[in-house]
Image (cartoon, rainbow, N blue to C red; front, side, top):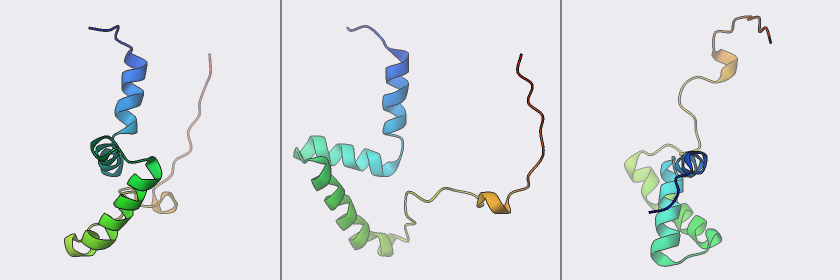
Length: 79
């Protein structure tokens, strides 16, 4: 058992958070592909199966655009 590194563990979890990143990780480790090759496989999968599954792009953030959100003025005080 190794030494735990919480900051490193958090960073690694966040890197693999999106579905695309998870897929890329599986392709890279499972097939031994380079990052470029894994991206090409992901693009091919999106192109082939995306329209049939009604998938939206993974990069698209949920919710409204910032311009359409309610905005409020706030005061920040630094001590």
